[in-house]
Length: 309
Image (cartoon, rainbow, N blue to C red; front, side, top):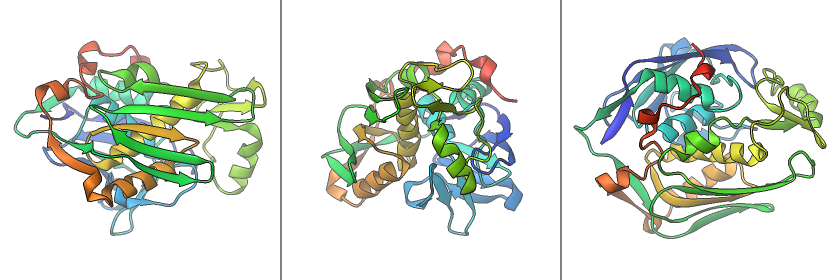
């Protein structure tokens, strides 16, 4: 079956790149609606959360609808929705960028858990099963989708900064692994890059409180890291959000090596350009239980204090 939320969830913050104040509201939606953004400042112009509407953008994922309305930095809220198994929602935002909140998906998860989950048994849930390996490359990086019974993510990164270095992690995303392992990992950047980004009109809303800022072997953000390998966990969180733009749960293993938003979208484009590489499947009860959001609402994670009303 499909799922939406019981009641609206509201969030306020600033855009990471624009620095502008933003109000975002996630609302219940009917079956087969999918995830759709609505620009409340543009008379409700809608932008479906789809891979084919992604436009080139620096350091984030940006969607642009057919009428020109756009919304950026969507990856953290998309990861939260996918990680909780929410398939239908309308996301109203009063500007061109989703609020960064604390730099992770945890506040979105907490707010959505407070809103509650509502089953929609009147419609089955379909998934996209990958049938053969599809891979894309850019420079030294690559991203790959290969067959698997449920979503798995394997990621590795390599930075010269000692505070990050080489990190590698793999997870079976079934049964709440996103909430347990990834949702609170924050976006990160190097101190030497911050000034250059701001001169280019980016990261104007970035602070030490909504990003992990590093300088060589030092972590400058108060409180340090939430996880020793927080950087690679955040890259996995981003991949979760970008893969959610497939429009349905993926039954596949995602492997990312020095990958990012653009490469993950390039991978989805390559997948859907190859009709023999994937198929639609209607999920059985057993397959439902192996999805990322299975059982999460029953356990109600302890990150309630991070919700932003």
